[in-house]
Length: 224
Image: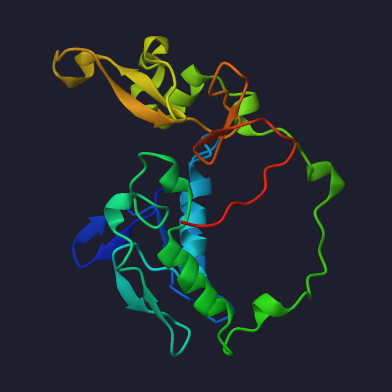
C-alpha cells in the first residue's frame, strides 16, 4: 500500500515504526510480518529481511526475549547493537545487510525445535514463473545520483553523489545543501550503494555492502 505504519498507545501515535513481527513465530498461528516500503526505493528489502529474521527466531541484537516457540529463548546479548548487524537499526556498513552470529544461532534453535515442522516439509505446489526470472539487479540501472535521491527523499533533486569523495567499501557521500539547515555550510551524508553498483576501477560491484567481482550469481554467505 506504501502507507505509513504506526502504533497507537493511549493518546500517543508513534509513526517511526517500519515493521512488525513476532520472534520465533514461524509455523505457528502468530507467523505474521508487516513492513513498510516506498515504491522504486528498494527500502523494503532490508525491512522485510529484518522482520523475517524475527519470525525465524532472532531478537534485536543486544537483547534476549522468549520466542513464541515453547522452550526457546532468543539470546543476542553477546552481539552488541552497536556492531550494526541486520537485527539493529544501524545502517553504516556491510554489517547492516547481514545477520549476526547470535541471530544465526537463534534461527538454528528454532529450526530444529520439535515444535517447528513446516520448515522441513517440501510441500510447496507453486513455482516462480519463467517470465519473472531476471538477472538484472538495481545497481545495473540506478546511477549514484538517483541513489542519493532515493536514500534522502526529503532533499529531492538538491542532493547528488559527490564524486570528489569517491567510493570506499561500497559507501558513497551525498551532497546536503546548507540552506536546508538555516544557512549552515554545505556538507554530506553517507550512503551504502545498492546491489550491482560499480565500486572500483576493476568493475567489481557491491553485493550486500561488500565490493566483489561481478558474477552471474552470488552465493549466500555465512552469517556474522
